[in-house]
Every structure is written in C-alpha cells, then in structure tokens.
Length: 434
Image (cartoon, rainbow, N blue to C red; front, side, top):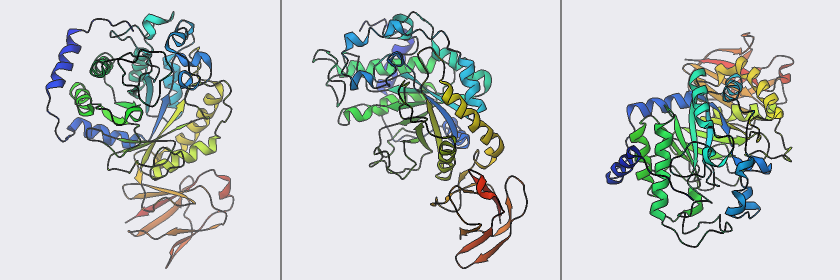
C-alpha cells in the first residue's frame, strides 16, 4: 500500500488524542440531543457499496472466495458507477420515510469510498470514476434534510499493518509482519478525514472489532478523537457485545433487541443506550446478482413496527449495483413502504416502546399520553389488550378515528375489532391514557 503524507491538521488531531487520559465517558449536551433525535428518527437506510459490487457476489467475496490482495486489486479499475446519482438515493430514502443514511466508507476489503490522503487504495486513485461518492452523498443529505452516518470497518484485509491477523483475511498473500500501532494511527487518520471533510456527521458505525477480540484496539483513544472532532457524533459498534465505554448507541445485526435468531447477539446484553437493528432487503448486504431471497413489503413493515415496539430504530439495507443504481426490486419495495409510513408514521416516529411489552400478536408504541397498539398477527374480532399502568380514556381506530367498543376485565381490556380489520397488514388502535 502506498502511503501519502499526513496533513498537519490530521497529525495534530492524532497527537492530541494520543495524550488524552481515558476517563469514564460523559457525553456532551450536543451528543445527548443527537441521541434524542436518533431515537425519534426510528428509520434509516443502510448502504453497502464498494468495488466488490463489480463481481456481483457480496461484500465478503474477497474472504469467501480466498482472493489474494494482488488479484483483488484488479477489480478497482472496473468500478465506474457512471449512473450514480446521490440525490436520487437520498430522495428514495426520504420518500420511504427514512430519516438518515448509513453508508460504507470503508468495508473489510480496506477500499476507501472517499478521497483519502493516507492511501491510494481509494476511489480517487484506483478507479476511472475518480469522484468522491461520499462528498456527493453528504451534499445531497444536507440539501434534503437527512442525517449521514459513516460505516467504517476496523478490520482491514488489505492494509499491511493489520497484523497479527485476526480470524479472517488470512489468505490475502500479505507478508507475516506489520506494525499494529501504525495501523491504528492509519485508522484514526482516516476517521479524522471523514469527520473534517464532509460537514456535520451524525455518527460512526463501526464493524470488525470481532475479528480480533483480544487485541488492544485502544478504543477510547479512537472514540475520544471522534467526540473531540464532532461532539454530537454518535458512536456505535457492531461488536455483538454489551455497550463499551465511549459508545452512544447499541446495534443488533439481523435481530430485534433481546433476540438471537441471527446468531450474532448471544453476548449482546441490552444496555441503556439508544438501540438500532439492521436488516437486509434480500439475504446479502452488498450487491448479489443471484440473491433472490427478497423480503416482502409486509415483512419489512412488520420489522419496522416491531423495532419501534422494542424501543429501537430500524436500519434497512440496500446494496447498490456497480453502475451506481439501486436495483429496481428494492426501489419498488421502498416506494410501498413509503406509502405506509406517510399514512401511519405518527405511530412510529417520535415514539418509544409502549406500555405493553412486545407480544406474539404485535407491539405497542407510545408518544406522550397516546399509545398505539399494532396488531400484526391475530385471528379473532375480539382482541384482549393486557393490563398496563394508566387509565384508558378513549380507544379508537387510528386511521378512521372511529371509537371501538371495549370493556375492562380482570385480564385486560377486551376490544371489539371492526369487520374487515384483518385486511390491514398492521391494524392500529390509538389509546388515550390518563
């Protein structure tokens, strides 16, 4: 890897950070305000995009097909996304009801999708496209009022100083030597670039710590650097553990908080930070030509609703094609989701987990003195809402605002649902609570 000169500003930031004494993290006022916004936002778009899209397999293709570094680097010149339009991506997300975008700035292959001055293994130096897609996306997000998060892989299959190797990247043909401290400096240098060259950044979405769990990642040094550059920036890590000191939100990969269906969350005890769950629209994260395991619109809307009922955000992934377009199957699904959020978004945005914990039939959300009962799976016209603290003063069909008949019982509130309610993919009852 060819190293470029480190600018004075980056060097000063790195040196200052290195002298900071790690203490228990105390978030700033700006950070706490951003956490509150994050919890209100509820819905975001995840974007996995890189040179791996050229192969049409997935973002892990370098590892799963044992492609060595020298061979993999031949892919970069073929990446020329002339159809990329940052504004169309942002408008698609916005029309779907999404409030923020999280995009891969660097995935495990180490390739930077931005203009990094610390390496030539980036979109500006190795592709014929030679445009900074992150800068275009940041400008479009500002224009249309969406916030932007950067995904950054701590794991790096390309960098020579990512050594000793972890659990992955052992077939890349790199020499068995390297300087771990130099790699950490490189990583912090790239993070400094991301946090100084692209305007306000809502947060950093880390991934890859799990590759070397026992390594000295010097996380607080990195986290303090981020917070010093942009105090409001939220830090989260897909490490599948309980939150670590310096982090601002907790994420769950392919799982709702408290579940472990995806097999990643066995050690992810739920902390007290804002929550987010990430899921794919098909099976893979990055563009996969043969991936036809498309989730239905109903399935994804239910996931959004269930996430809100678990007091969590929902980060829904797309893997754009190598030409820069988002594949039509995803566009069509997002448009339908947008129709649902435009009609029912009040029951999701700005809410927190409701008065009744998640049930097999669905979830509840709450905003001030209004609770929203989301019935996702129920067979009868008589519905029993479990008891909860507070007194019900009114109970109506959310969309029509027509009162529903109900009576209190020892087991809960028995509600008579209207005829044809089951035609809704999510039947919503609005409950006013005293």
